[in-house]
Length: 103
Image (cartoon, rainbow, N blue to C red; front, side):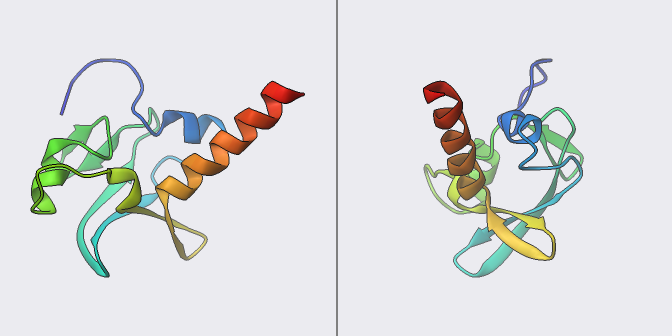
C-alpha cells in the first residue's frame, strides 16, 4: 500500500472507458471469492478502508497464501452483471493502444 498521489494501476482502464469508478472487484482463488474491493476514481483499489495502487499488492498476495502472484489474473470486475477478469480489460486496452499507434 502506498499513499503517493499518482494514479493507480487501473487508471488507464478508467480513462479508456473499460472500467468505471466504484465498480465492485472480487479477488478469487480458483472459484472462491476471498476478498471484495472497489475501483476508486483515481485507479486505486479500495479494500477494507485501505487504498492499494496495484492489483498485485503484497497484501493481496498474502490473502491468496502465496509468495507472489499476478493480481491482474485473480481480480474480477462486476460489469453489467458479469464477472470479467481485469487482465482481459488490460488486453483490450493494449489492443486499443496498438490500433491507435498503427493508425
